[in-house]
Image (tube, rainbow, N blue to C red):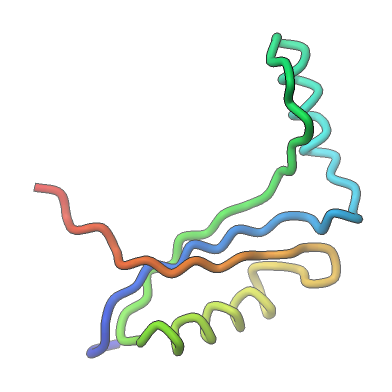
Length: 92
């Protein structure tokens, strides 16, 4: 798409608090076994970085919300957050 500003969407998806998180529990137990103290809880999730071109921030947020609802997250058992950022400038 041409025009508009380029944005990066960071989507983080986690199991809802009331849903059992066996992966988070296993990680928590492993951290304790290898000596990390004071870890109260671990929630295991997934993260997506999506580069968007040709969208203003409101349009981009609406589009990413639709992506989450239709594909990236299962709204029955998962919650998600969306963060929009200006992309980092190219290195060099």
